[in-house]
Image (cartoon, one colour):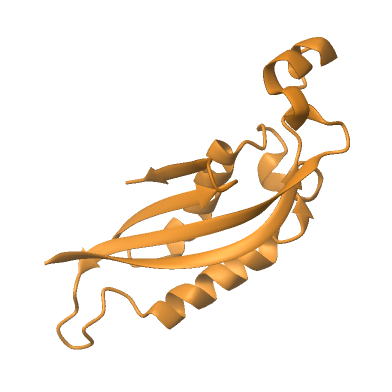
Length: 135
């Protein structure tokens, strides 16, 4: 039986939506207030979903405590209270959009999880805006 488990995490980070190949005017037109030169922040909510078979010996798809520790050490510690554009090498050559951020998180977590399971990420930037990525 395929089953999905979910773990939620919270952290804060700031970013600036800016394409260095565009003029300041075009950046303002496309990104609006999200192009603020002094950056802007979000209270991100991350939901990590693991889908797989239930292990008959443990009753788990994956131990939630282990998953929580991986998320805390690899994502929360890495990105909490950071400026994505300035502090995080993952965004050196890419725009720090929530779409790109969700894929960064996916690529960090995937090799650390049981490979037989499928991974999906939901990343809330605001109460109304979120991104979903996965296998």
